[in-house]
Amino acid sequence: MAGFLDRAKEQAQRGLAQGKEKMEEVQAQRAGHDLVRKLGAAYYRQQHGTGSPEEVQRALAAVEQHIAQHGDSALR
Image 1 (cartoon, helix red, strand yellow):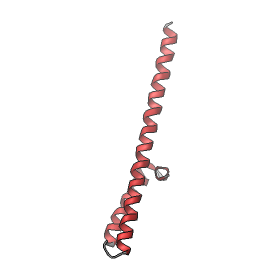
Image 2 (tube, rainbow, N blue to C red; image 1 turned 60 degrees about the horizontal axis):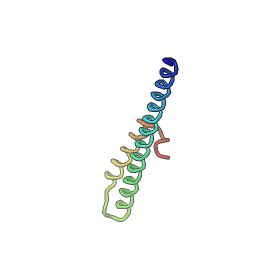
Image 3 (tube, rainbow, N blue to C red; image 1 turned 180 degrees about the horizontal axis):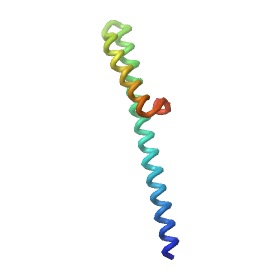
Image 4 (cartoon, rainbow, N blue to C red; image 1 turned 90 degrees about the vertical axis):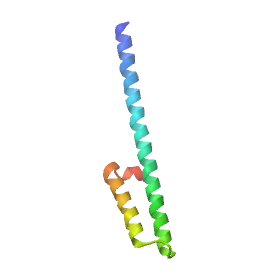
């Protein structure tokens, strides 16, 4: 019986670890999408005279930093 409980505990711990990993992946994707949306908004404002090239560069740098930390899969 102890062996069964040990296996069940291991399986539960693996499930929790996988769930946590998936949650972190989803959070990184959401953050990436938000950064890309901000980049698009900055570019739109620049093209319509209400934004600046510096704002676009800051937004682009934030996207590039996010990619460096999480990979480009975080933008899918």
